[in-house]
Image 1 (cartoon, rainbow, N blue to C red):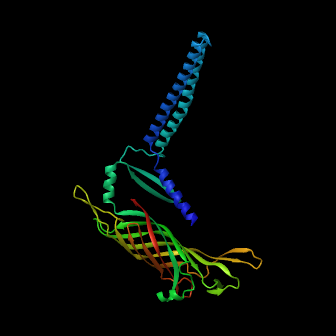
Image 2: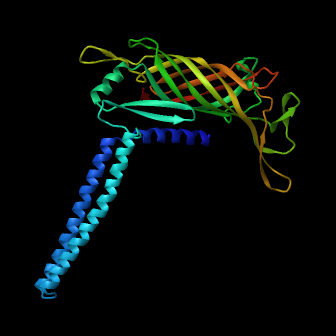
Image 3: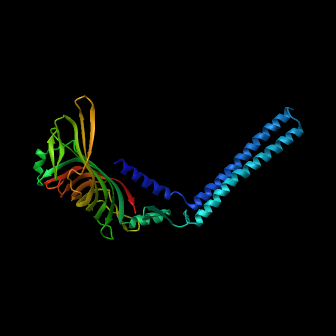
Length: 358
């Protein structure tokens, strides 16, 4: 999970940095720096001249010496101004070269187009600077983007029966799931409405903690839960998935009416209901065991194996939310283990953390 968070942070940072520099802004910054250099050096020269004049008044130095010191100070600060400004001029020349080569954007137009390349894929972002144009684009938008985070309890059903939760081999409140992803939400009609198609990419961490000191044991093509002869303080099976969720969402947010009489689409301002499913695949499965061996040493054991879990995952999902927070459930239609009727079910809370306009 840490790796995924790092990738997302680096991606957001890269996008932010790609949008941060404009040619005119950089030129203005260099011009400001040159003014500061000139002012600082002149102020320093004035202070030195003031000290020299004070010494002259006190007859500590002669007129000839005072003139010589003033000339020396003046020459020194003139050279410093030339040296420091020369550095800024080199930066300006490089900036002009970068502008010519297209490495830096100009903010003279109504929008900027920034390019971000990841591997063989190239993404383009238009950043509107004129506020009125930005607002007009927001009024016409059909797609928004949300960072999704969900968490809750995780367990299994046998033969699709909810009653099987009462006899489950896994702890209900101690078995958790976590989901982190990015979703897009597109209005199905051109005009403002309540119906949307929500789709995206998510990473899921499903944990199952076994009851009664049991742990998973491979037996050929099957996986069995067996009582461990050593007392276990932890017995957890974790499988990580990459999924592509797809939902039809009804958003009851009230649309906004502008002063010109036109209607603007608004989302995530009221109750929302989504129903759909997902398709994905497992990235890996591990079993974590913790116990104290006969010599009194605490052991943390990690077993990495597929444990005969199905690679392909698909299922159903639904959520009922108010603004960015809601109740969430998902159910795998594929069996968790090969040749079984055990299927994963998750119930929890879902957060649409941030809404961005495209």
